Length: 253
Image (cartoon, rainbow, N blue to C red):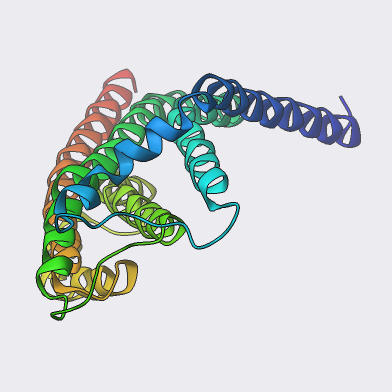
């Protein structure tokens, strides 16, 4: 097959897989759209539970009561369809990978999906209640807390994404060790800089409050340690495999 025709076939396959991924998101969206209001009420529950008695959420824009649940359902549909999206990515890149690379990439895709979901769950069940209680406790006397539903949605989506991405640290470290960008020993030496870095990242990726910043920085630090540990085990296993392979070749000679 000539290079131009091969390139065109790759483009066609890429388009097909993108369309399949979008179709998966659309199907999930159609299934969830009827429950859009209930989904928003569930996401808003941590804030509502922390609000003073008699306070409620408000909608300052005319279309907000419709657009906010609609936007949330669309984003949630993408999150739910992530396994299908990653499967399409895997199907596109797998033919160009070596056998040992396929053995590593497949578990990483699964673990990265689960870690992203874990980050979102941690944000919802741990960070949100503590952060909202803190916000309400520091409100000045005489201030009635009535959060706009669109502003709240933007806030929680930002935190969902921040914690979801932050929980991918072990996967990123394993990939860096696998590709030779760094080594577990080098990362251990840089631990003091990493600790400072995770708190800086927590400050930049979360709203300006100490609670959410700290609750993002500490899991990032823990996940860094887990990534270094797993990366060290993988590197050791790979070195043992290469050593056994070289010994086999020498014996054949």
